[in-house]
Amino acid sequence: MPNISSKGQSMPDSPIRKLAPFATAAKAAGKRVIHLNIGQPDIGTPAVALDAVRQDTRTVIEYSPSEGFASYREGLAAYYRSVNVEVTADDILVTTGGSEALVFAFMSCLNPGDQVIIPEPFYANYNGFAQMAGVEVVPVTASLDDGFALPPIEAFASKINDQTKAILLCNPGNPTGTVYAPEALDALAELVRAHDLYLFADEVYREFCYDGAKPKSVMELPGLEDNVVLVDSVSKRYSMCGARIGALVTKNRAVRTAAMKFAMARLSPPTLAQVASEAALQTSADYFKEVRERYVERRDALVEGLRKIPGVKVSTPGGAFYAVCELPIDNADAFCQWMLEHFDLDGDTVMMAPATGFYATPGAGTREVRIAYVLDVSDIKRAVACLAAGLEQYPGRR
Image (tube, rainbow, N blue to C red):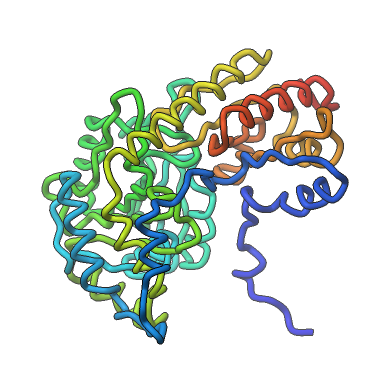
């Protein structure tokens, strides 16, 4: 039997989905599993997007242009200008999800063996995308003690060497929910300029900032027009995770040209999903206001409940819809699996994502989990009750 590739062997498991077989088994055993492991919101997709697909009259679902429909890119450019990001349709490449946008960015800008610095914990699939591109992830560790704020610039500077080619941020952050301070981004921009690095930014949670926080886009940083690559997606903004439509946005013509070659190789992004995404641009501001209010209510219920559990440590997220918390346990992977296999509270249990997969530093995040507050307050409160009871019974409690 032929062997699989070294890349296939070293591709990391997803901490978000790797426990899915245990959740399936728990459900088969009659348990109700409360899913807080994945950022799949229960918020309704805007009706205008769904209606656009229902009312589409085409008789053939043809390929779109490899860069995406011009009308959608024009609409996206108008949206970006409305949030103080000055771009044109020619700066935008429509992709099959934000994931593809980041893979295209890595493949277009970095060579195998190059290094990208990422503050950790970070979105777990960044590890996988880097593996696909043959790129080495160099972590800079953020701390729960200060709400996972952007680490000091000196920490980034200390990691830079001849192999360093880029820095990658997620703002607002997944898995932490942190919204980076504008002055911290300004300081990072100086470092990027000084070393002529690429600055990749995943800004898919832009609309979901709370308590008056306002995210600053890397596209607003002066003097970095040739350094910045923005990654975006409709998945979370419009609760359209299954549409798989994203965007790579850059003013660097060489990067855009290279990324377009990868785009042509995969032919086109999904046609009908672009129809829905273009229509979603008409979504009213009231939709986002209501959604933000619901997420704040959910966040507050989660944080308040967690802080009542002895030994649990959590900060208040400023954006997105995730929180990373520290638990009084020996190992988060073992605990999350145990909650599915061996625990229930009157038939209910909870599924979380072990935080180890959100770190690149070996051994980091061993006692942490990521919780996605994407369900109703009643489900979140029930999940917290399950967590509290589970911690009391878990054999590896510390």
